[in-house]
Image (cartoon, rainbow, N blue to C red; front, top):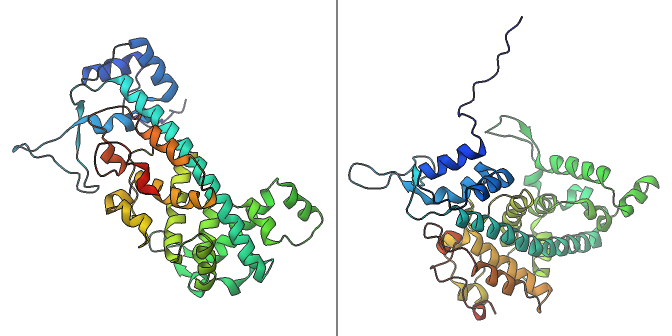
Length: 334
């Protein structure tokens, strides 16, 4: 009989009871063993581990100085937890993050739909089929090149058109299905109903500058490249929210751009804030309040953030706030 060559697991499999024992042996406070087992089964050990990771002890050298990972430059963590890390508080932080994702998606949805409408209106004015036409695209985005990391030959414009066509063919929107069945050209304002945020963001990034400026001015932004940066980062956040990934203390590689206007000057966002969720909240509110001046979204965000579980190793500064006093006064955002 042939042998079954299964890969050897890098770590042993643990039952939920063994997971609880492991956490307790590392210093986590677990007051209700059955609840801990239930939450581990519902959420998963490694999903929760992202929330308790900052609460693990920092590895130190012989002089007592914290060691940093050579690649990420983040502190290297020991297996043991810092003092007073409570499993119930970690679960509360997980639930806080879930509520935060829902509020962020609420704002992103409004922004996404509005920008799709603006792009369709501005570009459709020039040509109802502008999304198919090379003449509206920055020539640099139509060049064929070799991707240095993958060694593949790429053309961003052709890749975008191919993906966009797939989205249209897959779409179950009645307006798009009618055009397909009737074999009629699909105008811009109909085609955008099939777009996701990534498709929207990439299309804007490929447009010639004069068309980007028309769209950015409709959003109340004088710098078209700032909008390009915002759309790219909002899309990353949207994907994290859509895939239920942790967002409360995540950091992006590219700081959000800001404008030299009173709104942003009052907020005084530093580079760290612009790489974390607080910076994104400021950007989304800038866009949302233009759509709905009476929106209470910011109040909801403020209320939620002020309810964040109080965990010493999970401070507000990890969200990009300048201090640990909670959400700033709402008057600052007027």
